[in-house]
Image (cartoon, rainbow, N blue to C red; front, side):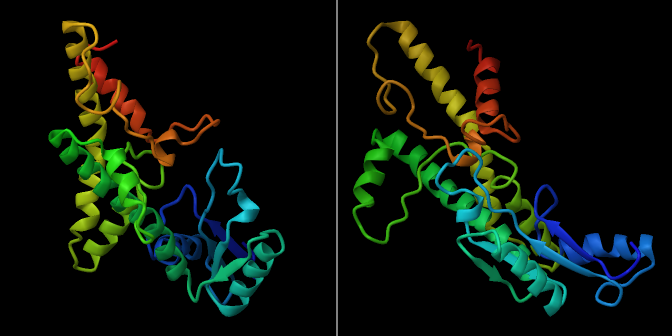
Length: 252
């Protein structure tokens, strides 16, 4: 760096917790270069918004959040993205706001999935088809139709930990965020256990009906678990945990 640069940090694969850019990355740049942010160089940040394999929500059709370490940097980065993103942009008032927006997008989804995963475990014990319940509840206009399943990928299952760590650094112990993570982290082992039970039941006699739902547990995979359809990405994939769990219990 010789000074006068505008350094841009896209979100992936670096952490997204509020402060990661200015508190973790920038001090390293300043120490190595001897330059100062907003005096000798500027910094910009825009969180990743992409769903690989999704033919509908492609890069140019997803609104982009942008930010900069000063008004000029923010304007330059926003103009750059606005020139290629058909859906438009949202220029956040600070880099930390943009980072916080990204981390809560994934954390919110993780918590919502954890809620329906817990419902699925409860309804399973009651002999009720979870998907039938969700279909009925979805007839109300403001019901959010999340479905149970395995949470994987390097975003939804990881970002809540960044947020939780940041919360603890400022003296707050998060409860809902970590509770959701514990429940979702345990779903691979739970599904594997239920599959093994079904295998045992079937081995006892043909035609045995799964007390779960239909012929096999109906746990729709979440986008993060597929990570992603028609792509080779398998980072933090929940299905891998489920497969290992079945094998450890003697399954093929």
